[in-house]
Structure formats: C-alpha cells, structure tokens
Image (tube, rainbow, N blue to C red; front, side):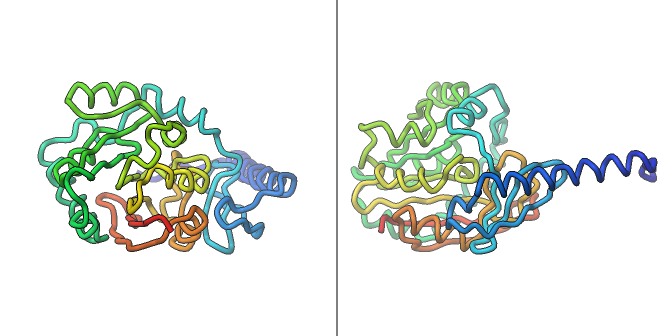
Length: 274
C-alpha cells in the first residue's frame, strides 16, 4: 500500500515544528552554557532525531546526550512505577540462551580469571538494576554470593519470593548506604549507565562499593542506538574510556557483540579501581 500523501500544509507544519525544535535546542545550548557531562568539552552539535528535543553530540569524545535530564529522584519514580520490566515471561529456552551468552561474555572479558583468584567465601557480588533476576542466576551459578537492587518494587518482590537476595533501591541509594561500603568484589551493571542522570558521578561513587581487588562490569549499547527514547546517554568507546578514567577506574578489557534482533553494537567492559 502506498503511503498517504501529505498536503502542502501538513508538510509545512512538519518542517515548521522541526525548525522550532532546532531553534529551541540551539537557544538552550547558548543560554545554559551546556558542556559534555563526560569530557567537559563545550564543542557540541545539536542532533535532530524526530521530535526529540535537546539532544547533543560532543565533538571531542562523541558522546550523545540529553540536556536537560531528569533528576535521579524523577528517574526513580519512573522506573519504580508500574511498567513492563524487560525479560518478564522469558521462556526456559530463552533463559538458557541468555545464560549461555552471558557466560560467554564474562569469559571473553576475563572474569573467569578474576574468579580463580578468589576464595569461595569472598565472592560477594551486587547486580545493579537486577530486573527479572536472570543475571543474578548466572552469577549464582558461577559461585558468587549475589544480591541485586532495582527500583521496581513489584519485580523485587517477585525475586524475593523466589528466594533471591534483592532490595528496592537504585544506584544513588545503594552507594549512600554505609553497610554496602567495601562489601563487594564484583559489581555488575547491565544496560544501566545509559539510563543514569549523571553516570560520571555515580560510577565514581560506585568505587566505594568495591572491596580491595574488586571489579566493575558494565554493558551498554554504543552510539548507533539513538532511536531509544529511554536512554539519556549514547556512549562511544572514547567517551566510556574517559568516563572510567575520570571516575577512578582502569579499563582492563572489553568485548563487543551485535545484540540479537537489533542493529547496534553492545560493549561489555571489565574495569578495576585505579
């Protein structure tokens, strides 16, 4: 079926709306003195994606980001509300494929080597944004004493009912809890950092969760996933490297793969405290 033809007025209105968004984005950039939240550069370009306002690209580190962004409290309310949690209703076959893929990624970045250096009684891990708990299952199978946090109370209640160790919290709340300081030898964040309001500040604070010799593992899509409206940040490899360096971490290894059913690359990174 051929697409419906737009009238001249509809075409004009569409282009006028796009022009207004560009003008608003440029005005915000000029008035606010916006700078890259990772590398600090002020050499920014306005990115126009459909009707999305105020999306900018850093010429230095190639980070693409929203400005202004919701506060952590606003994000907590959004992700903690009644919304579909990815992975709910995963079939046993899908769960098995996920476990195989996740273990492959962990081995590819050298997590297995890190695990061999630890005694069983030391393997305490925190999964940030644990969602439906499938990564918790993988960590438990690998011998970790794993617990999770997630802002979605309904999902946490399901995990607790299944015997998992999980609590209602986001990363900002977790790093502020004294009992978590220096508690973990592994912190995992799978598709979390692109949803944070200030990833640099929170990754820096995450170092306080790690015991001596602990490592951070995170996974995120790369920049080409600009169509996702839930993401506040779209990272490049350069921006991730700068982020870790400024946050006090050392980039140890990484692995990249194309996500199943998507047209973008994912990167999983293993980092230690510098």
